[in-house]
Image (tube, rainbow, N blue to C red):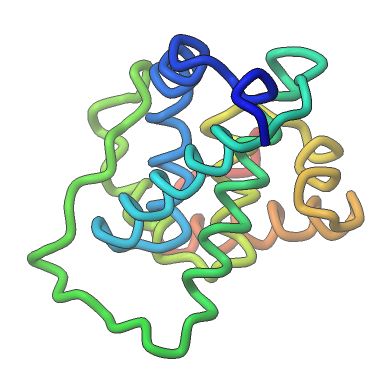
Length: 167
């Protein structure tokens, strides 16, 4: 590939600064391991550096990063040699800037959900995507995503008490 087809360092830096926290949170949600998360984030942005097609909009670039990060994490999870890290070595998941400081218990409960629920819950509640948008990103029927969200809310309600049916 010629250099002219690749993004400039300035463009990569701007995209990195804009989306690194979101990509990190998504990867940590899936991997629950600080070291694998950091590798997945790095690999996601390396793929971005070599992605030569222009994005149609900022939503398109954000969706591309979400799908790429999700796929990178799935690849990490598939590796047979993946070892579990002791809980005390895991880093803290950075909360979104507008997060409620008392939401730590909710975040822990979300991270304890089965993988099929974690990503849709993260994308719906933390990133603000609709069920249809999540379905398109994850290549699943919209009805499946709605069911995952409903089942995740029921699970969270059992774990935490309270009402998670809003949304």
